[in-house]
Length: 445
Ligand SMILES: Cc1ncc(COP(=O)(O)O)c(C=O)c1O
Image 1 (tube, rainbow, N blue to C red):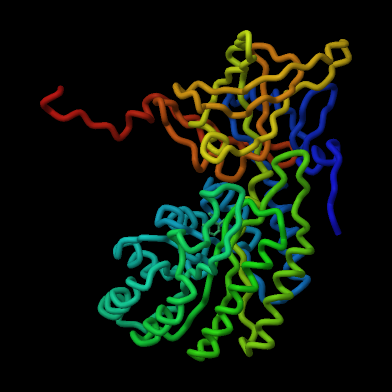
Image 2 (cartoon, rainbow, N blue to C red):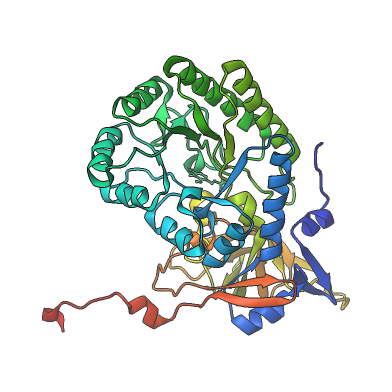
């Protein structure tokens, strides 16, 4: 089934509606929230997170019983988001000790966390093992030292490990987000996979999983299929050569979302049918048994759950351009500057019936002292005024989690909404927060 949405349906898919000419997000008046909490403001909907998780779970579960969804914490590590997903029975995919700490604090069982770091220190690996977190290795060089460290320190049976495989077929919305391929830093390449698992067997590991992640922001099921088929060939060959029975086969994250109105959501049923179809076929023909089928979605679960509300400080009209200068910037949302990403922008009011339907084209720019500080380029919008609120859609994944204090700007606030409730999940930083860890050497005092 191909899903094709017109603009109204697309807005509906994003849970946006207008009541009395005012924009509502999942039923809540965006202007009121902005006045109450100030801007820039990330507003996250619990209902959307739960809905996306449920949809994905149902689609996968309809194809296979033993499925696991590891939420990719990097997309949005707000503790409230983690608690929502933990309560949904999600597992977690972490890439740093900080993310593991967040998950443990949110109540995730260590055994339900998969740690896929890269270039970790021994202390970091040791911490993960000591906590009982599953470790997914990205380098052969770590196997031997790891085994001796674990034997010495824990004197217990070596735990399950897995390796991140690079099937050399990547995909993604931007070059920096394609995480498989010959010249990419991630994973173990086909020609070295056997060596990796053989070394792990040699030093005494006996329980294994296997993982891959080909990239991020993928809306084309065929891209997953192509890489998935290659990956499963590697898995089957490892099983045939080394007799390893994998407890899980993890296909990583990467499911995209429609950032542009011209894009349609990925067909989840097709994704589930295709990927689990391939997986089951490989399990049958390769005699792999019935391992757990794992995915690690981040963007798909939280991307559409959040809007970023900003306020216009200045309208600048030059002979060539009109700029709407807002009280945010790439410090608040870096994706447009970093990846050239598109975030759809809308105003908080629609045609109010006063006959002012005129439009103009604006660049929405921020407060950062760099000309690359453009949040949205050449957008046709209703005539904008200083003081108006603008909303950037789909800011829930890699939005706040990539925000910075650049130009000494405090980090923005985050609010969670559910039904008619709203609550701060992160206070806006203050200038004092910026100075909290700063020290002046005695000779400068
Ligand atoms: C190892 C791993 N798993 C999962 C993800 C999540 O990707 P996405 O948010 O596109 O689903 C990433 C993203 O970079 C990743 O590196």
